[in-house]
Image 1: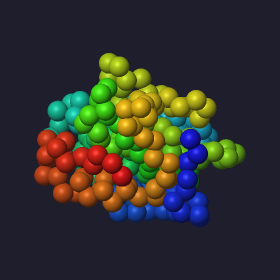
Image 2: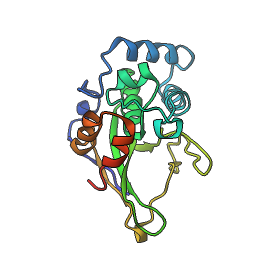
Image 3: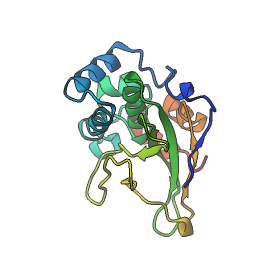
Image 4: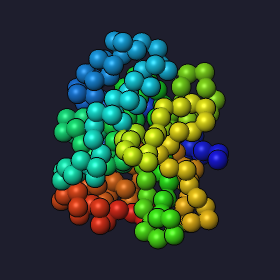
Length: 199
């Protein structure tokens, strides 16, 4: 699948935004800590990936009722769904000058029912010509996502025959439909009932 930049300028994928707030001191603090042991861009990107995937529980797995949508809140409260965790990973990448985009999949149950939009991150490391999608959702039985610049190791591979879709657009900030549901949800159960079904 060919990924498509929403913005022609790569600087858009390094910019500070309302959700990807990597100018926040907490983002800088975590980035600096991870950089200490991982000074080059590749090892830093992989370490930041593991940090978000493994140390910030997915709120639907953990049962946490809080909803986060701003990167600094995700890191401070240590909770979020796939969208929020992706925003946090994008912020940690941008904090180190690594272009990072938000991108999405449409997933369904086996029979094509219950569609839902799933959040990912795409990054562009120095010397690379292609964006590489990453999934920081968090692993669980049946889900084994890993950091990879070659063959994708996402939580799920789309099944077009079931109506699933890989959306190719690389967004600099969360898609408005995604950000809208995150900001309006009073708690995670409500969020679970209002997740977008397509973009």
